[in-house]
Image 1 (cartoon, helix red, strand yellow):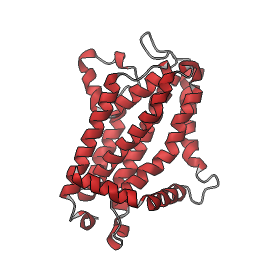
Image 2 (tube, one colour):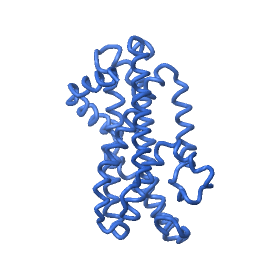
Image 3 (tube, helix red, strand yellow):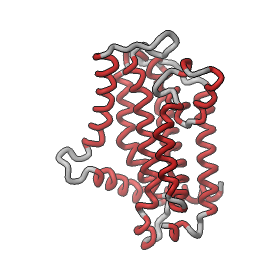
Image 4 (spheres, helix red, strand yellow):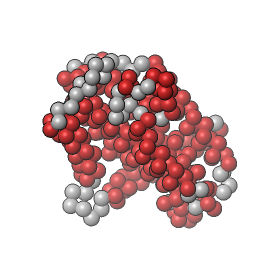
Length: 266
């Protein structure tokens, strides 16, 4: 992991620049609009409101026994918001090096600065919304001590998005088809996770397939904390560690292989 450690050290030395670039990226996304950065929060909030209105108010749909909660809308929101955060961060991180090609060719900046900036900009938007769920779901968790695990889940999710977003950014620089393949994988990945349905509704012999989706661990953790006021199970933490380790290993590998060619690919 020597390459990964050296890249992390370079990013630490450039942390002030990283934060400035993050602020500029968030502001640039909504430049020229009347609401400005407020649009970053309005869109996810409207999506959440739509789930609640359609499933819990209009149709009053309910889940069966064994589900962490009976209200369908309340269940969907807890899984959908982290999934949206994951997709946004990974997608933006993956395309960050290609977008910054001109800058990297003219300036001796750490290449990993740009995936980290993109993921951090996404986190600035979604982290407050995820924390807002704590107050929205008070009737479910009653401020259980299990809420103490929520900041750790958020931090681990940010690390997941960072290592995988950075690794995919290098792969996308080498082969642009990576963006198309990952985009398609994210579009169908939601169906192989407990976002849309409780795990117990998935065929028992095929539940292992759900763990091929990295967000299964995080979504299960959020559901346990926010819907049941319970600590995430050991399988949740194990899933988080495994997917972080796989991402770190892949990032180390692609950084070693691209050390002298990355800027040329861009």
